[in-house]
Length: 362
Ligand code: PEP
Ligand code: MN
Image (cartoon, rainbow, N blue to C red):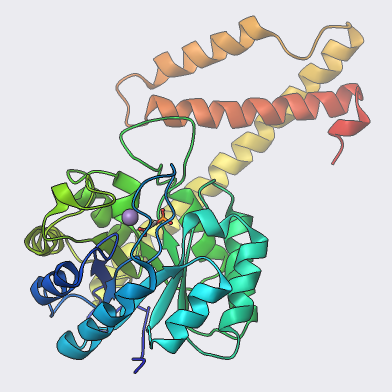
């Protein structure tokens, strides 16, 4: 029997917690984890039946054999269950076996044919669907997949932020690129977003920090892979935690309110925001002023037949502004991005002035 899934934040302000193993391995493993999950905290039990693996020859999931185990989780522990689907046949089997929620994996979200096939298969069923971000940082591809599922009549849809694969190999398995889920929330404000720190981190030590960041950004839920013996898990062994560790992570988090109900707090925030509004206007006015000068320089360069881009000057600007900010609270990374954006616009404006390319005209 399919339970009612609610992806929005719980009424006490706590996020939805999707917990359970990366893959269903054996009946004892699935039921053992379900038994030990903190029942006061867990909202949905997850376990992959079909596993997309990067290299052939790895464990590819138990498939349909695991439905009985997930049904036992529903019956014995009263938890709704979710699994990954990658084609219409998977969806049909899940529907037949009363699975409560589906998720579309990152490797499937990249393919509009696959997503459309899944959308057509869920049409009219009302089953809850989570759409993971595509592996590449393309917000439109993510939104497109969400739209296909919503257009198929699914009203119970959530996005899952699991990080993005890039050529940079940093401390994360998948770069969080927080600006992408933030932009998704701006463009689809009513859509719940669940953060999946397990697949972002790819390891255990970073899970708490990434979960906290998701909470601070007002995300609606957390998906955390949980296993009784993480080190010996058949997939994603480095990133899973035990049910006890899951409880520790969740207990360590500081829950925040999206809005304070306290009048005094609200008034103070309002006051600070008014100052920010004023400062932003000042910054924008100064930028416009700066660009006017840039255009004058462009005119002058045109008169004297001088190139727009001058590397020496550009390097000087970077070094000089960095030195100017020494000891102040702005990171060099931000300064560089900020100056690059200004420089790009300056070149664009000067190109317009010099009239050297129709291509530059917007
Ligand atoms: C998973 O949730 O186990 C999984 C395969 O995730 P992703 O599609 O995010 O890699
Ligand atoms: Mn996994």
